[in-house]
Amino acid sequence: MTCREVGRHLAGYLDGAMSAQRHAVVHAHLTGCPACRADLDAYRRLARALANSIPVAPPADLATRIRVQASRMQSQRASRRLWLRVSVFFDNILRPLAVPATGGLLTAAFAFVFLVQSLVVGIPTGNIPNDLPTDLVQPARLESLAPFPLPGIISSSSSSGILTVEATLNAEGQVAGYTILAGPTDAAIRHAIDQVLIFSRFQPEMMFGRPTPGGRVVLSFGEIRARG
Image (cartoon, rainbow, N blue to C red; front, side, top):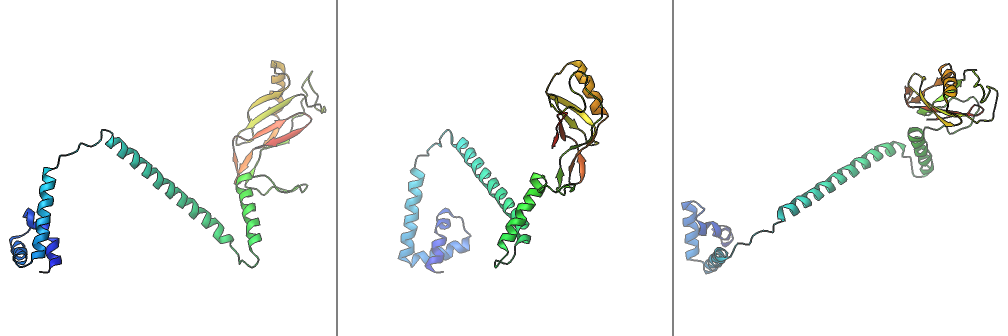
């Protein structure tokens, strides 16, 4: 057995934590090797010093500090995992748009802007008359307003815009509720508004080609606009 091999077994030799056969081999080597005996004496002195040392009590808040540190490390690992997922997601989106660097960088930028506009904004990009919107999100809109006048306030042909109503639609394009944004709010006016909204036709908000509830249409009786 070499000195290096004996050095790895000195601690077990002192503690008796080895088989009798190995103990005999290490003992035979120590008998003829002064260097290894010096190392064994150093182990003995270290063992006595540790045995005579006074145990130090841990700080009272040690467990709390360990939990706080573990929580911070867990939060950091979660943040790294989230960042990795976001990076992979955007990489999967942008990689198909990649084109040769000789002339495709501008094309890829325009394609990415169009993709974000279509998925997030949902607002038509052109002002072409009679053009059908191709966006994935289409706001609710008014198709036809019932020709009922509002007596004493405004006629169906008036354009003063003194009465403004915001109607909320369900997925079937029916009015689920409304709010008077400007104008009188007495019972007679509300009754007249109920009649107008019941017999009016609306297009519900469309998302990915499917009607969805929650679309809003603002009627100003002289100006009609819609917002999703």
